[in-house]
Amino acid sequence: MPVIDVPQPEFMEDEEISIFADAVGKFYQQHAPEKRILKWREDGQVEREFWNEAGQAGLLGVSVPEEYGGHGGDFRHDMVVIDQQAKHGVEGFAASLHNTIILPYLVRHGTEEQKKKYLPKLVTGELVSAIAMTEPGVGSDLQSITTTALKDGNGYRLNGSKTYISNGQTADFIVVVAKTDPKERAKGISLMLLETEGAEGFQRGKKLDKIGLDAADTSELFFDDVFIPGDNVLGGVEGKGFYQLMGELPQERLVIAMGAATGIEKALDTTIEYVKERKAFGQTIWDFQNTQFVLADLKAKGTAARVFVNDCIAKLLKGELDVATASMAKYWVTELQSEVVDKCLQLHGGAGYINDYPIARMYRDTRIARIYGGSNEVMKMLIARSM
Image (cartoon, rainbow, N blue to C red; front, side):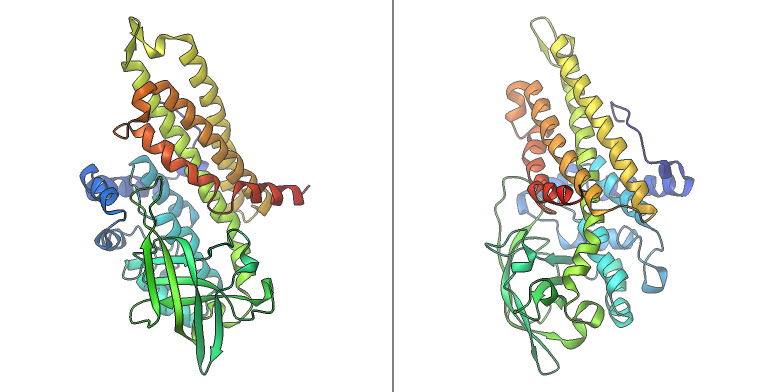
């Protein structure tokens, strides 16, 4: 049970949501024990079989409409899957990427044929997804990408490379951000749907050696004259890719903020447990006034972050979450998470630097949140534009 109490979103009081959360939690307990997670860390990725198990248990495509093989839920159900994963420490499983970032592109922007073809397989785990945006030397400036998908007969030839791709080693369905018109910037971008099986010219590069998130594979991808059928432009129309990406970013950034809020709470939980057991100078670390003051300050800030995130969730469910507010949540809560984890590690003393202690892994894993989904510097730019 959590040591600290934090405000929960109102929808968590819904009986159906509560039952679903309990079922998801039990799945993680049964299928992702510590021994299995340790193996994922050693391998640097989650094995494919776990995706199949998650699909069979109904954890994939929970908000995909039933007519496309989904479970007919909504963003609340997606959040339950992510929240329970964080609470049970299930590292590396990219459910948030698959469910809340990639599948919505198909649901909201795909043609009827694309939805019927791909969504059922993505729901069962037969297909595992990734999205290939970032390129070497380009970073957050998506309008400057150099990967191209140029017309060739009844399809396209995809050429270029991508890096820092989550799920890159595992995914067999990849949404590739490419230029169908290299002369244009935003208007030249399209999202291409690539099934990797049998795709000549497609190559996975090395699995990148990161400083954190050991169980999550991140890779380079290479495309050398890879053929993309003409029907595999997302939405069926060229030049819409940038606007499709921008339309989904508020939800993506809220998901990152949600993860950061949960990370803050986990760091506080594990630290409070530690300081109440660890003794120094004849008393527990908790008994020192400095410890109490530090943790009281962090709890106050963490509670404020959770209230802010809950408000953003309510806005998203009503279709009212704007780019600036989502950017504020992503920026501020991830910055706070780094502060909280750092101060919690300090309260562990030397033990905080040892990987056997959860706070050490949190310290390494937390750092990327201020970079992915758009760096926090970019978030500040977006916030400033709204002022």
